[in-house]
Image (cartoon, rainbow, N blue to C red):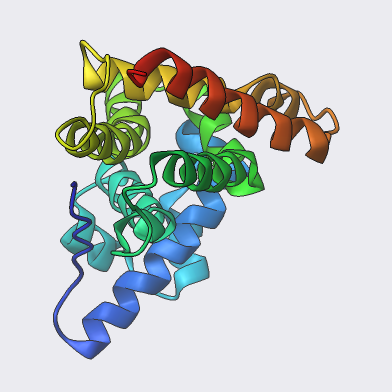
Length: 209
C-alpha cells in the first residue's frame, strides 16, 4: 500500500518553523482561497520571514503543496495501521467507508474541496494536480491495493481494481457530499444507510458465490 512520507527540516528549530508556517498557511488558504492568500499574512501569523518561506517551499504553490501533503498524510494515517484491514472484507469495507465518509464531511475537507473548485489562478492546473494526487488518488490506492490482495485469497469478479475502488468511493459519498458543500443539513441515519448499502451492492457485484 501507499506509504505516507511526511518530511520536514531535520533540526528542531527548523522543524518548529516549518510546522508554524504550514499551520498558518492552512488557516490563510481556508479563509482566502489560493489566489487570494497573502504570503505576507502567512508570514505575520507564523512569525517567520519571507526568506524562510522561500527557502523551505520555493513559492506559494510549493507552500500549498507542502500544506496539503501534510494535511492528507495526517488524516490518512489511520489507513496505514496494520490492524485497520483484515480478511473480513465486509467488515473492512464498512470500516473504510465509515472513516472516509466522516473525513469527506469534515469542515476542513469541504473547505479544501471548495478551494480547488473555485480556484481560477494561473496555478489552477497545478492546484488540481496536487489535490488529485494527494487526495482522491491516494485514497484509491489504499482501497485498490486491499482489493487486489483479497482477490488472491477469494474469488472476486473485478476487471479493473482502480476503477472498482473509485466506484465504491463514489457510492460512499452519496448525496451527503453535495449537501455538505451546499451547506445543507446531513442526516446521520442516511450516512449509515449509505455505507451499509454501498458495501452490500459492491460485494454482491464482486464476490463469486
